[in-house]
Image (cartoon, rainbow, N blue to C red; front, side):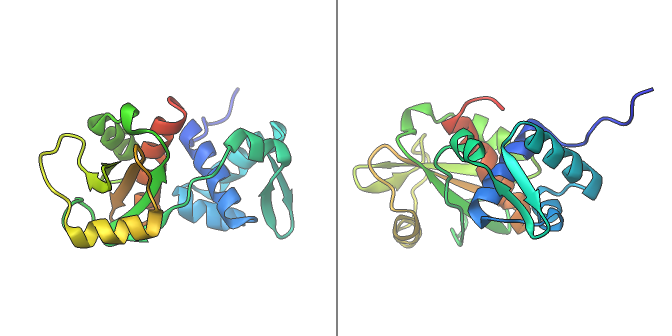
Amino acid sequence: MKGARPSFTEFHKWMALELIAEKGRISRQELCKWLSLGEGSVRTLLEDLKRKGLVVSCRSGHSLTEKGRKYLGEPLRYVRVDVGGITVGKVNVATVVRGAAGKVRPLRQRDEAIKVGAAGATVLIFKDGKLRFPEGFMGVSAAVQKRLIGLLQPREGDVVVIGTGDSLPAARAGASAAARILTKGEF
């Protein structure tokens, strides 16, 4: 007889790798908080990543192996931001995806964010020195543009992804899921 199915997804594995890369070393309890998973699920997830040679564990936490760093690629940088009324959640986390303007499908990015527990995701394209909504239905205020451009330093053709939710972990997950679709495709 087999045990219960794990409650984590491929996305959770990806986000765990991102969090470990971002923090250098992370505890299982901190991963539980950021991934919104229980201790048993995170333990199983980490065992899977260790079996694949992507993560090593010690008393002080979990870190990426060289193979894990290569698999992850250049990690994205996530920042908490205040973007006024252009998102639907209370908490917003943004990142920039280099050269992805041609891959933007706003509803797809939003849906991926919602699947992982965020309230949604907003995508902005950097074109002609300005951040713009892909459909052009609404403008981005000068104050929000200045804030995002200052924090993320987008270049022509880059995409700013803003995950939004009721909590910092949910907003971060939304940004990660929407950005992952732009960088790597499917989970």
